[in-house]
Image (cartoon, rainbow, N blue to C red):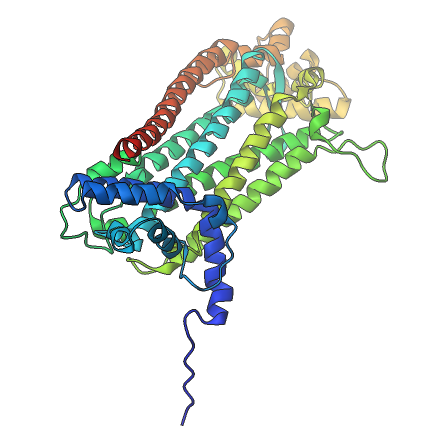
Length: 492
């Protein structure tokens, strides 16, 4: 015969390992959101005739009398299940308990929870968006100064072809622009209000979901109540956009970290972003870029960890996607913001060694692709043959310890095609010039200053559009908060 042990709720182990942590997280993230949800719901109940004006006034006064500092300092003692029930207790202290109880008419913790999660997440999204726009602005501002500044471009970590600093930075800005668009879409899709969905099937009370949505600054209510409770793509889309951005940021950070090596000697960080060594007096470590990479990697791990945690959970109300998980979402996005913001500020104050970059843009034969192209254009040879000629020229030049000279070019040509090329020494000099290499690439997306100036203008246009989008969304939330405050004041 087994011995059945009955413990009073909450069991000590459950309290220690679940409820205490969830309560601490809720105080940190959701106290203000709970308050706003209660205000909006109470106002709607009165407007729909579900509670009286006097009852609304009593509830609003009790809500406004809540001592948030005392609630934040409260330790979890098991006398209530969670923050929701604590707030219900505190509201009941400020007005008749029967009236306080009417506040919970036509709603559930389920629809409250997914609403407060979205309220917190959308602000986190805007914060990250602002940092992403700031990083892109740094890239664009630097690009605007360096349309003619030569740099070597690399493939497979080896010198490849000449480019310009503007072309290089515009590539990063373009990546940032797509990250911004992904975050905007995530914001738009999460900014719908689940309140009124109830446990999962709405309610028989004549509530007005659109009114609550407006008071809380949402675009509109969510539609299907089952999906409102069960769907998690409001945060998985956000995490997907954040993850894509973090991959980009990690690649950018790695690029600039390589540039900062003394062997490369290309970028120098401002003193505010470097640290010395406790033993080596000469050290000037580019630690800010290391932290960008480390924090970004941590953020990506958290984002992917959330995805792994919920990918096969039931399609319904389930704790797996709620209180225990939500803080990891916010931590991942917070760390993503730290990485993006730090990279932008670090690069904004950095300086580049453009003399070294220009010198390397003319070394290691990296302009000879244009020599091969020139031979094709002038001689009518297939590129396969032209490529063979130029490759042999490079090998001979390396053996001779020289550049590709006119003599080497003609000697190789006689060996391969049995005759001299018609190319003149001046034409050869132009063909292997990094300045010429960059200048002739005028096609869409190319390196020519005329094209990078056009591309910069396009990116500036996107920048203006995105700043307008951000301002409109920010102002909309501020106006909704003000409107809620005014409405509360009028009803009290």
